[in-house]
Length: 195
Image 1 (cartoon, rainbow, N blue to C red):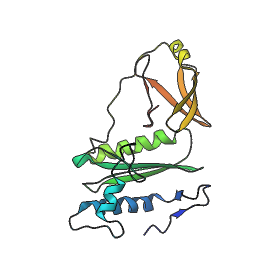
Image 2: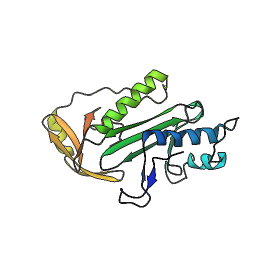
Image 3: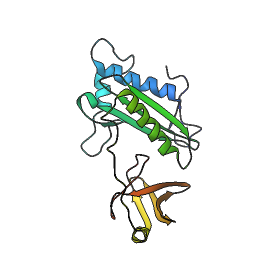
C-alpha cells in the first residue's frame, strides 16, 4: 500500500527510501499489526519478522532498520531520515497502536521543529514515557565555552564546536545545533540529538 514510496533515485544511494508521511505511517501500522498477535495480523510481515526488526543485536542499538526503545506498554520504534530537502521522524508504539510521522523542510531548525511537534503529540495523547525529562539550563560564563572549541565526532557526524556570541554551537556543514549547558561540562540539545 506504499504507492508513493520508492528505493533509489533521486537519492544517490541505491538503498535509500523516498517516501511520504502517509506511506511511512502505513509501514508503522504494518509492524504494529504484525506484532499484535491477536486478531490483527500484518498483511506482509509476520510477527517473527517484525520481532526481528525490533530486536537490537548485541553490538548496537538498532534492530533491522529501526531503533527500538522503551519496554512493556512503552515499547516503541523510531526512525529518522533526511534528504536534500526534508527531515523526517517516525515514532510508533508497538502495544497501543499509536504513532506519528512528522516531515519538515530541511533547515537549521528542522530537527528542533520535529522534536517540538512530536513532544506536543506526546503530551496530547499521554505518551508520558516518550517525553524527555526536563532539564535545567545552567548559568555558565561564556568564556568557559572556549575550552570546548574544535572538531568533534558525534555518532556518524563530524563537526565543529564554535562559540557565536554567548551561544555554543555544533556545526555540521550548513546545519548548526545549539549546545545548551546543563553544567560547565555537560550540554544537551533541544532537537533530541545527543552530542
